[in-house]
Length: 113
Length: 112
Image 1 (cartoon, rainbow over the protein chains, first blue to last red):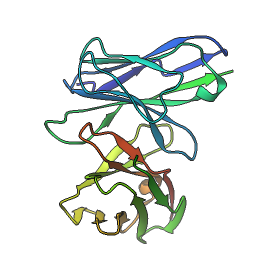
Image 2 (image 1 turned 135 degrees about the vertical axis):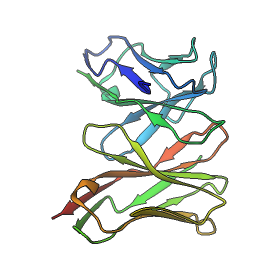
Image 3 (image 1 turned 60 degrees about the vertical axis):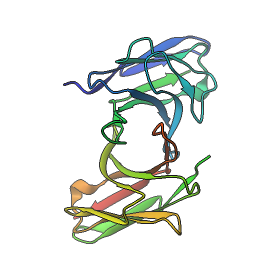
């Protein structure tokens, strides 16, 4: 199993550009999450999904949208990137029927200039 | 919402000594407390976790203790080794969707 994968690994955007980050998991997990990690601030939850076709806001949702059209994929979109969205983005998934453990992807480093 | 505070922000220890990281949480409904280790440029990886119905859990050189009354939990690493050098994050889960509120992290440096 590949576990949780993320594409791309790195990206540089100009202010105002848009992009989509893809998270994929092959563990048949029901729950999926998007976090951002900034220096000295730990990880903060952006959006999450508790099943195919469902999404909900986390702690810092402004400027981001998400979609979960297929159970194995969770997409994070930036419609109009801003320098404040420069960060490392991590996706995670969990199987609530088995445990609370969240499995993280390798991350995407995004720079907005 | 939940708020998790983590101390210290940096911790330097000599190889072989013990390291202790402490976290406090605000929501008494929180029921799951994981600890993650993150090496530079890598993803966070779970090293140990504890549920609210347990006071202590140990896995080889790593242990976690939970005090529900005081709303704090701690990570203990004994016989530290250079490969223990990393950033450690505590977290608390406060609802049935498994959402985690993370602490700000502790940079642990183990010097030989």
